[in-house]
Length: 296
Image (cartoon, rainbow, N blue to C red; front, side):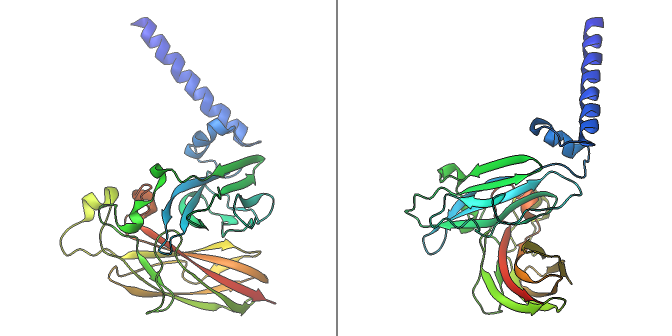
């Protein structure tokens, strides 16, 4: 018994020492890769890495293949800006275009399926997201293994389809992480540009949320959130996040830019389960994108 108590005491000291050491190290240089989850758990605000994540793939209606990527910013406060270039590029795509719509602004936390790389169905392309930050290099490849099929796009996640999104009430519809793209719109520095979206959902709820909230006659609202995906300056949304009825509704935001250049905005529509509670089925949110050209 004494031996067991002594062992447990020593283990506690060792774990405490690890936490202290991690905290001290975080005040100076970034933590080692193996300590990154610990760094997040103890609330390190800055200095941690952003890691790309391969989410899976699905077939578009035109037969092309959409390959979905997300990311994980392990900081609790630091938002990173990594422009398209040698430190933020997509490799392995025919034509060699390093810019496939990936984000250059990385919000804190885990963000699932924030863009897709589209390739022909019979292509030999093997997209890789190459991202460098905080002194680390990440080289995350995609694959078309059947284990990575995102079947929710066709309703195979308990019959729950992603929400639908349009930029015109009767216009083309986008759903899933790839969505649709609008633009380019034209505006000037400091002059707001108004953007409308129409969103709706099938009212079905997957994952943990579905067990608690699914009930007859209940149609949960859907959330509309805006993000800067790419661009050289700051972006201000008059309505960065709001809700509309699940049966369908219109949402508007006015967007202001402080610097001239080309921007890519992302709008994400989620049902009440959202990316966090739906796991990797990607049944529960839809991205779409807006190109904006800003002049002085």
